[in-house]
Image (cartoon, rainbow, N blue to C red; front, side, top):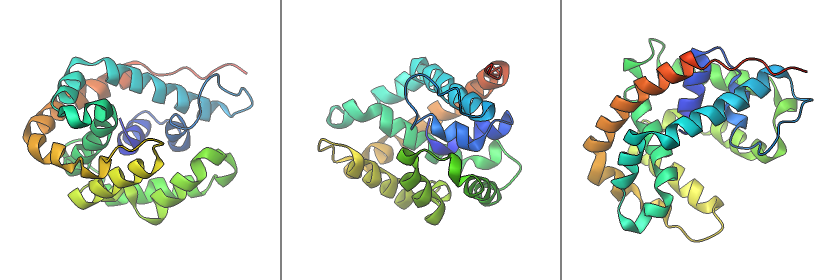
Length: 197
């Protein structure tokens, strides 16, 4: 799952927004000097990713990606599933997407001293450009893919991968709508206990 899904699930389980995002930027063993709420968020993020990557519906979605982009299927499905969450937001959340993202951005900006250096540029871009809200549109998704392409070390041409979403939109949306409720149940039932220390 990508940023929007992790934040939605953090909100649903009263987990730190910042911690839920840090899971993509903090690798290896957790620094025990981090506040407990951030450690819980990172752990939850990792559990969500593990559950998602192993799920047969997600694997089916990845298999829909053409051989041209198959090596990036995981990245593409993370972004495409965030697109589907954004377009289907009303099915999962009473609060509007705009209100939710404004709340998230305000919260994230309150804790700049806790943001890892590796995350600062991404977080600043997210807030300044309403990255989360932009996931509703195909232009927003294309922009997100171009941004990822620019961060990858080897040439990927991910900016051209919109064709994968357009060719498989309805099937992938169906996959998402079958998978995401299962993920919500998993996260709800798999509450992370605060680490000791």
